Image (tube, rainbow, N blue to C red; front, side, top):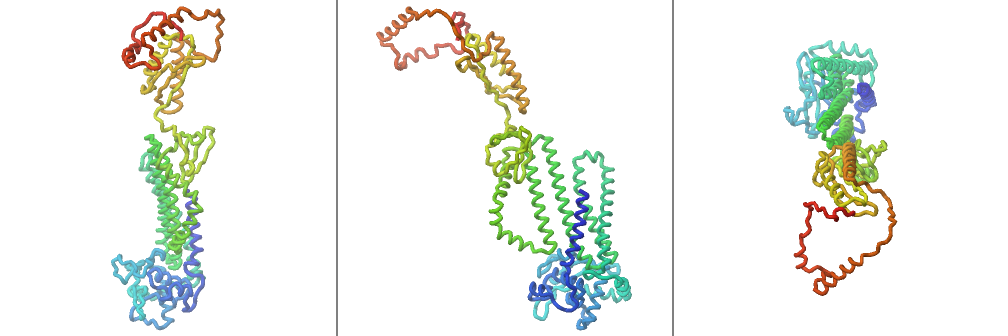
Length: 593
């Protein structure tokens, strides 16, 4: 991360140098000509002095292009200054530049107010705007702009007469100051309106400032680690790590701003790097927010895992990714705005092309909406074992576009959220109990009392087992199969996961085998028994008795066919004893089923 930040700062410095050409003008203008672009931008005032930002921007661009006569048009002078003499104006603006190099602190152009009315809430009145400070003779004075009405009733912004008067008074009190400064700086060639040595010094200063800021943050970290017991083990240490990198950038900017002014580097150079400084401050803020998002999400993730609230993990992951995506968009817009691009027009263009973009990114939008559905509806969460379609696996990540699932074959399936959210999803991790359902087959030689013994013991087993929920827990003789007497067991197992369920199921199966074995019966298996015996024929006596009984029912008009009459039903109702409570020792109990 340290290398990445260093590379970022270096790239920003180089980018700033390349941007200076466009920020302060490429062509050096030596007369009082006015750019056609400026005229197109502002037809009412060719010099573009209608806002505080355009006033300061035009002033410094004119100085950077060595067009001091044009720069003089951005200043409102005290009444005792002769403004009709071009030579005097050029000499005076050059002196202004020298004073600003050493004693001026002007806000970066890109953060100045860009409305014709200026900032009405700064307490300076409607006609004044504070854009920096001047430190003259150990006194700090505001660098003011003032709104002036021209003869054609056009209102423009100029460097105020108060500020220009303060500079002129300082020059009058320090007569040799300008001559000494210019004699030193005239030895060096100029580039983009400033000594080339100042550009080089600013680059070296920026790199040295970052090294110094890095040392400062290392010292701060050392003292914090010394006084903070168990720093590495603390959950809150990640917040300090998130603060150190952006703090390093802030220190770098502060050092550059102060040392460059103390060294008296050209105000043109400082204003050019002011854009970079502003970008660095925004970058520091964005890096801090980015790292803070990581720290907070990690902290929340740890807390949820400690409390075993796994359903919130996917929401944390989705919100973290969404916050980072939004942060990137905001950062890009702010940086482009800082560099002077008209993002309002860009956003309007995006609005016009929004329909085409929506059509082209329809699937992407569907996936994002599907991701929101998965996160907030929570059919599954990260770590859940689920089934969708024919796929079984564990959810590893729910992203903005897709969801990743580790299958039982240890492969990774990535499915778009739009498809995933429309699937029938079976979440095994959400179930509170496991179903135990099995049918056992007993031999046909099992007697009725043996069957009753087996059923009672199986019910005892289900009721007595601590891992079986009693509602419902049943063992029932359900019918006669082709080769077995079928008994069904149905119950729910209290288990935390599949492995525990398998262990409990194994225990119950073994106990079922013990019950069947202790009954004297056995499990049936597909078989066919052939009985070789002499045919005894039908019992004639029983046949005759049955026929006589039916004939008697006919004679007495008591044949209950095709339906039983109501009196007969009432008479025989509840005459069978169930459940059986007395033991019957007659031979019927020993009959085979």
